[in-house]
Length: 334
Image (cartoon, rainbow, N blue to C red):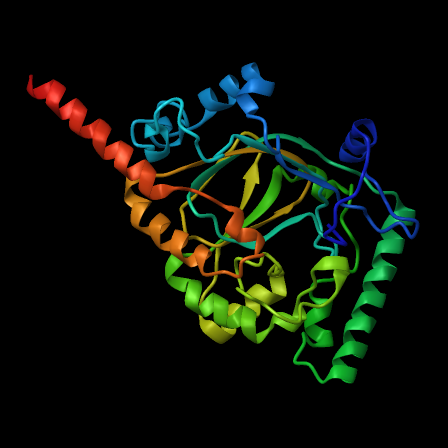
């Protein structure tokens, strides 16, 4: 998560880090994330029992069941037809309680083309040593000094020193009594669709205050949300409310809880512990128009933009859903 780049690591070492933590040579926490697994094969083919248990645990199955949900338009596509990959998918990532500022275990601000439900299935809390806590605190101070120097050299309207200090607690809480008492595992921020124009305006205005690949500053945004280059820290959310009068719905997801994200609602997540989540996409009748709008919006992105890879085929789903509904009406009338 620090460099936002792919790394090679064997399974044993990855899961040792999941339960015990991993650090760089300077003791800065190394945050790794396995996302969208399995990448191509169907979850139900690789892990059929786990898939069945996950689907049976979903709330509001009329909407969320990817196989037989009567209000899930995506479930209306007939067998034998090539279907979009709507999951389930697994996301396994490290996490720590405090906001680091750089290299946090986050899913950056983005917007899905369809509705989604995300279920937290497992967590592990990592305890850092006092030596690591001291090293992290020192590195955060150096990050603050670097930000200030870059601001002076570039004349950028960045976060002030006083504001930056708000993101750097005097004592990090890794492994202390307070963090052990916390039951929450993932911090969510979900924005309303109505607030998207103001949110995009804020991101364009402050884009150089965010860091992305190799922890370099974001210098250009093709699309403030679909680029998935920004994560709004506590201070950014405060500034967003002060400047534009909007704020996200912020809450903590606990083990066993499911989060529903409506299509078109920008959202971001930060892991407070190591988390294993399973997610599945669906299309509700209420959000068909929003899915159609998003499909057109994604098509207008540059050809090499990664967000263009999403292929929902919403129009095909609607046609088959109407066809099935008409057949059922005919059966009832008979």
